Structures are given as C-alpha cells and as structure tokens.
Length: 476
Image 1 (cartoon, rainbow, N blue to C red):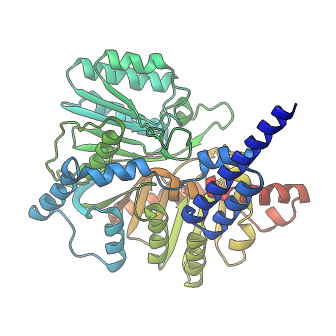
Image 2 (cartoon, rainbow, N blue to C red):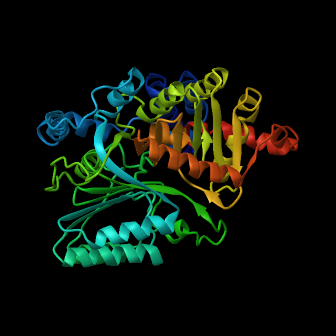
C-alpha cells in the first residue's frame, strides 16, 4: 500500500513538473498574452487534463516546415527567384502599383503578374465540369492538392480521370491532407499508386515534435494542368460540393479557373508543399507564358503557420484598410481576431459599405455559435451582416471597391489566419471584379440581414453557449 502511494505521489509530482515546464513554454511562445495566461494557469492547475490538449493545440508555428524553408535555398528557393527574374525580363510583373498593393506583394513574396485570363466558376457543377474537361486534354502533367477528398461518386470520377491520364503517359501528382481526408480509404489511394500516380499525404504530423499535433492542416485546393491552367477556390472533392449533401442540400461555393503567368506562382505553392511531404521536386514547366488575349493582373498570396509573419490575417487587415467604397467578404465562418475586427470598424467609420456574408446553417456548431458573440461588437457601428438562407454557404471571397476581387481557401477565422496553409488569388481586372460583385449581389438577395435582436432576445442558455464557444476562438 505504501509503495502504491509513493508511486502515485511521484507520478503526480512528475506531471506537475511537466505542467510547469509546459506553462513556461506557453508563456514564452504563445502569440497573445491572453492565450499565454490561459494556458499557463490551466497547465499548472490541471496538468493531467491540459498537457495532452497543449501537445495537440498549443502551438501556432509549424516548426518542421519552417526548418524545411530554412534549408531550401539550394533546393527550391531558386524557383521563386527565377520566376521573379523571368517576370521582370519579359515585363510581365506589374511595377507601378500603389503602396497598399506593395504591402500585399511583400506579404505574398511574389509579384503581381499580368496577361492572365480567368473565369469565375459558381458552384460545384460548373467547377468540376470545367476541371474535368481540362484534365482530359492535359498533355504533360497534372498537380492536384485538396484538403478533403471523399470516396463517393465525385471522388471516384476524379480518381478514374487521373488514372486514365496516368495510363496515357501524363505525370500526375496527388497531394491530400490526412486530417481533412481522414475517411479516405486506403484502396482509393492504392488504385492511383498502382496506375503510376505519385500520391502523398501532406504529413502535417511528420517530425519528432509533430506526432500528436492536429492543429496544422493543409486547407489549400489547387489543380494545375501543364503549368498553363490552374484552379483555386473553396471546393473540395465530394458529392456535398455538388449540392448532394443530405442535410444542407444546395452548397454555395466559388472557384476560379485562370490561365497565364500567375499559374506558375500557384504551381510554386504546390511544389513547396510537395517538397515538404516527399522531399522531392517534380520536373515541371516554369516558363512564364501570357494567356492569349489575357489582360488581367493577378496576385497569389500563399499563407500558413510556417510564415515569418501572420500572412493571412495581415492580408485581410490590409485589404480592409484599402477599401474606400466597399468591402464585401463571404466566408462560412466568422471568428475574427482583434486586428481584423478593428479594421472592419474603422472601415465603417470611413464611410465604407462593409458587408459580411455568412451561412444561416451551421456545419460546425461551435464555430457557428461563436459568430453570434460578435453581433454586439459589429452591428451597432454599421457593419452589415447577412445570413445566406438558400443552402450552405462555403465560398471564400472578398471584394474591395471596384478594383480588386479575390477567390481562395481562407476563411474569416483564426484557423485560417494562423493555423492552416491557405491560398488566395487576388484579381485586379474590372470585368472580373464586376462578375464577383454581381455574384455576391445575387447571394445577398438570397440572404437575410441580421439584426442585433437575433442575439439579444435569445435565452440566457443560448448566450452562455455563445460566450463559451467564443473562449475557444484561438483554435476554432
């Protein structure tokens, strides 16, 4: 009996010591003082519960990917330098840009590239019809990267088309996030591998310090065909994205197809991810080729938890600060940080038409509840919040005045700002901006304008659930 008590006492002491050490780590590394205090108190007082949680959710910097970038100079860093030099030599980079866009260019690490041509793709049927048509005519290679791939009718259609192209001699590279695609069966992947497709998980848990973390995910959705055509947007691969979800029905999402020099910047993003996952670099076409008749200027902003700066969050702050007439943002989630929230409020005070479009239905209950906690902060100052009622809204789109529109993978939440690998394509063409504006106006037509009473007149227990959900904002 004495031995058991002694062992128990030693165990408690060791766990408490580990809790204190973890608390010190949290104080030294957690991004905000509020988060550091919360983790430190929890780790010291409840180490048996919080040590595991801290191992999974306690970091906001993907150190393995950071170290890969620090070593990459002789491996892939020259590719971005080559793109910049070739863009300058061919006069493809836009050199005359505003100070506001200059900041975005520095965040992106890529220039604004001209002579592109894009097509806005509204909803899944249009997106995958065009994607499958372009896959069918691929001549050299296909790069595929998705957060979620599902083994359903659409997932099998994609797999079968990729297998056919591999059998035709086209090089196919398939990268998926193992957390987002956790339900993807091994047979799905083996069939592609047996057909000669290069298949890899993103491996966000690779490395001695990453085994238990679930925080960092590759949320990008990228397809590149022959280095000439690229697809970017909100669609993953699954029947739900074709409006076949049994609960949500109509799935409102947006993608963009683009041709021209900016495709190589999207391709570079894929190659960096592929190199992290496999330590290999595909043999690809890196020649910058203007799209015939292409007149659009575009910028690719790739962001993630390996960046020196918080690229995604800073991008949102910058585009909100750029707005003088309107800033419209569509996102399935609304859990902004203080900087973004402040930028939205200042935009309203400048007289900007600020609109946030969110879904009426919830696919993640906790995130949905947390969004209600912002009503008292944003509605009284004049920010207009809409809830899309004609299905589930999943698009990630923003519109700045009449000169910039963006389609990508980043949500208006902390996870996209700091924890996920994301990609946003900004387009400065007036016709494209007009098409996005028309699309969003149609979405607003199918939405209801939120009132403060939607929160204030709710029962106490609902408000308690909302405030409790808000406490989890840093990891939502």
